[in-house]
Length: 119
Length: 106
Image (cartoon, rainbow over all chains, first blue to last red; front, side):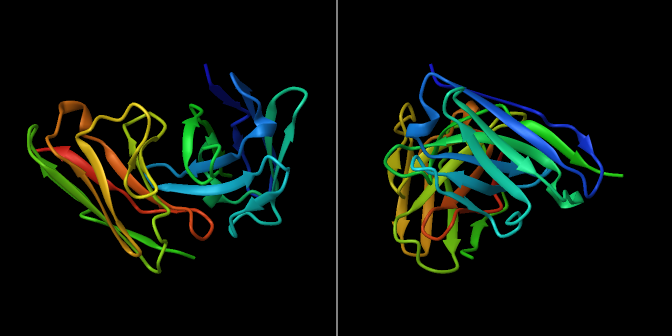
């Protein structure tokens, strides 16, 4: 059974840093397109970052230069390092797996972890 | 950036009725468009991908159509569990979502 479990969400001050983790089971992260998608409270969805099976990473303009998406193949884990956090980074962050044929459609989502950026 | 505009923002219907949701792209996305359903407190779930393909386990009452800039999601006869927020999403140029349509019980 495919499962994605996020952790690491917290309350952090503007300008601070946070690292989110995503534990995957039931499949191999290094063989799949994996993404982070966020949702501000009461708002819509925003694609944050994607990592291809080959290891290339891509980011939304809003987080480029501040966020880093990485994976640990030996642990089947994904990470999102978030630096220089802003209030508009607040939201639920979902770890997501893309279809094997194309990474841009999500077939499995985690339950999400809440990041709150506030002073 | 490809902007997706969904209409209407809210759709009020009764069980058994037909629902048609629209999504318009600011530029052509070919058929690289998906639809997701999200219920309160839950992660989204893919309903339709590549404009007209039903995802695994999705009932036949859901159908998608369109190409280029205009797309629609149709639910032929609403069941109580279909009332939720629906998002369209494109993968032609980066990945962006529409603002959502809230399908609510009338």
